[in-house]
Image (cartoon, rainbow, N blue to C red; front, side, top):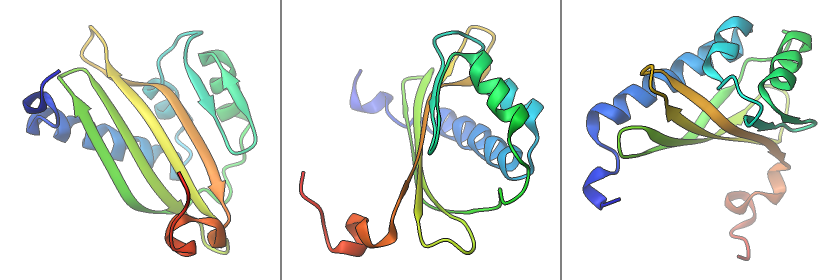
Length: 141
């Protein structure tokens, strides 16, 4: 991988669009879209704030059973980086109304042979506001 293969403008635009589609589906509880955006494989992983899901079937079951209430959020500090034409990461912070916690979400996206981008790994966690590096003035390595 060379530097000129990172964040190719057309690939970056594609990943930004699919990331936006994911976010819209998430906050509007469009489970079928969320399911379609995850790689249908036993190798797919989603570690959440309160659950560890390994395999598409567990992720799909979690989405089907999740309450649609309180999903609205505001994103901040989103960083999408593409590597070549078929792999990307998307990192973002999020805030939900009524909570002082800072949510963090990371995703690894891969473009498969059918041309579709899919999440192959994801992680969601919450950080108490006072513990965040930006709120605390920095953090050790």
